[in-house]
Length: 564
Image 1 (cartoon, rainbow, N blue to C red):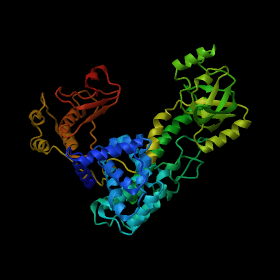
Image 2: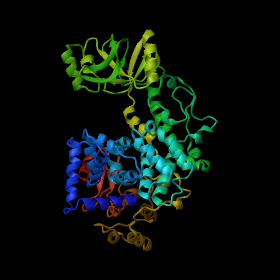
Image 3: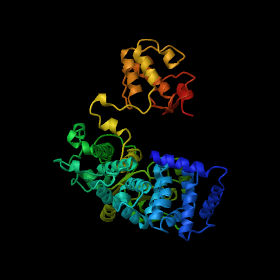
Image 4: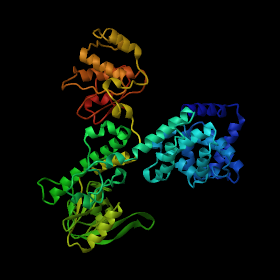
């Protein structure tokens, strides 16, 4: 990536120079293609458009304009398949791929913008198939070979259903060490990334367990990425304990090569089991199997009515309509317009897209989401619209509600909306920040050092740890720390990851002393964010310290110090 940054900075500097007339011509041609004024019909047009793209100084802005334009992505797709000659692949195609390697593109919208462009380049695989063949034949120059490795990493980083077709290629290249044995450092680095991604997709380390995953019910799979986030009826009915690993099993030295895959798998299953535990307890209360109070709505005597796909000029995902023989609790009787106004003012009644449980004769059928159509809910009797996400849930619901004598809808109060995004992200995860520090430390002494350290401050503190640190840290007030506080401070300054714990106490505890000192020291090198829960106040900083704080429900005395 260092070479990619260097190439991009040199290219941008040369093309954006005010004395470069070709830059202005390329900018006009770039705008003309996006507006539809210029149509790409030949390889010369395609090469000129690629040159015009690479002439744009800001890659995020350029990619945003391409995606936003009706002609942008089709033009990129077209210019990558006008020619598939080695000259084009090692020339203009490589220039475009290296331009797309700008670090900023990977961080914007979680890389979604970059993925859209990448998919247009490889779909249909006219260019991609030739690119793969040229790499296998060793016909690519260094820049093109590095771009091929980068593109394969991006394709493997796509969601599983889109990246699956590239796994065999990646495994073959890894097994033959075509990337890992490259004489170029950047290509070898990409090869290590590919090997690392493939390791996260393997569940072989879990299969050998006597009570391994899979086979308990219709939503229990060896590969946790195939597990539906919302439970199925059979899953909640099953009495077999779920597959969960203890910490010792995750840290087993025999599993070191697959530790990341095992860790992500186990984190997903643990978090999902927390969500299922709350749902099970909630349903047990509703069904009278356990004492407690259920805050969600419960509607009995539903009758299947129709299929709903929205109004003709505004279609939406299909849902099944149910007629409520009895009125919705908390909804008063009156004119439809008054009921509609009440529903508008009280959005917590049948919250849109909230999860519900459909019961047929007291048995769980499915977990649909609520489509909150206030026009239908305001009618007397009201009509409820439910949307089903999974094929299994849809099939089961259609079969069961047809013959059921009693259909009940239970609005789930569990915060599924809080669990679901994290669970989906874990299913998509193929890497973790601070991986080496958190999963592969052999001993505390092997903790990795941060990329930048305040070495001068560290040396002075070690030389005389008992003196007043006011002059060293340049604070307005005196700072004296005891032995344990000095050890915690040095740990935070010299390690990339540190856990500093302090006993319960007020502002004089070691934790509340070390935190502002660390923040103030590191702020000289980079921006610092401080986060705390609503039960804590941020540490008191000097007025001259302009570090940023991220507060969750700050107290009145903390408002002047919160993030603007």
